[in-house]
Length: 496
Image (cartoon, rainbow, N blue to C red; front, side):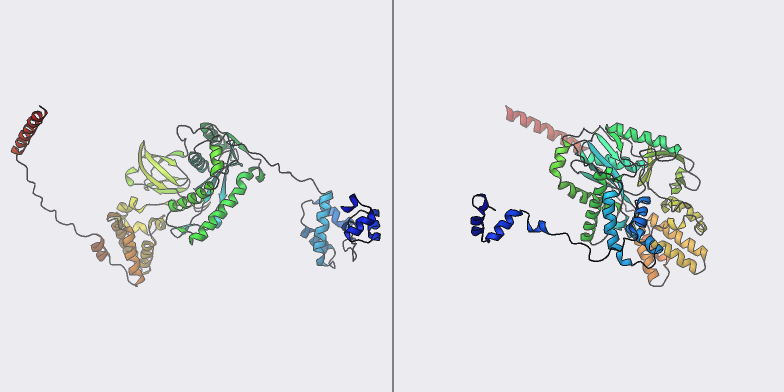
């Protein structure tokens, strides 16, 4: 065809190596050979002809969301002799019908994000990671914050649910780590922020969330309920973050961490690596962020709770022990996601681990044996039927000892020995070492010797050494004064 632009058909065919007849055939029909092929027709009869218009199309119109396998099962129920091998044919026909006659589908409108405008918050379940703290499975989730333009992200380990406290603490940690504030904050319909709860809790939660947004000067927005792709800038990032954590855990070789702080440091490290890959975009977006306020705002709830004669207080169906000196007083308790900070007036009196109810029908217990051991020594038999007995034991060895002693049929001795060992652990600050000694004895098939353990971990008080103090003579100070005078005269003479 290139030769044909300047030559006759015969000359162009000769130069291209065609015959003259081929040249005139091409002149008569300029279509390519592939365009001249006749579409292949069916090689066998259509097995759906008897059912398509009469049964399948009415099903598709009546139930637009039905799966192909559902249509096939219904056809086979009506016609037991129908060959099940028609599934692929049925899928192709239904897909083609839906493309031409099916309902209109939702359209996702891709957005262009400007720097400094939008930050997003959400919670994501991380239970599939299988994290453990000191051998115990950690039931937790992550609060996840992300900037839509640059992709900066921050993750905070949350031990409870999607509460306002978790949202406030995680969001503020993210903003202060970022060093600036976006103009708009978006989330899905979090019950901690919007009116999704019962009427008695709606107003308070909504006001607190509005106050949080007002403190940082952000406009609160949310996506429509059930429309996850409207929050896609963070929903898709959930999967990427969890896959990065999974890869790091596989390289680490274990999912067990020595403490919650160690696990939080691990998460921070992984998130920091991901942010380092976006350093240029993050630096560009930081220039468009509003400045942080002078300080943080409240990221906790506060309750005033009386300490009962049981040596503790009940908060949200969980019993917490405190030093018995506080019985009869009212504590001001700040409720964080992972801890409680207790105050007597404005004086801090302690920090407690946050507990959770066991189930809807059973509450929880957060017990520190040091708070009650002095009273338990006076009434050791109370240990037998103590409500929070299992939570009282700080380590498994103490519980194992108590159960072993009870198996010998002497509850009184079991209570006495166990309580005395707990008191020894408290007084001599040897909880771990004493537990190891108890476990060693039990593994050897013998009961621990209380007297021997007392001698080992509570040595007799040493005698107080005699210290002789020799006072210096006052004449020494007179000599020092004369030396100072002579030195001063020498300096004056040198100056002259």
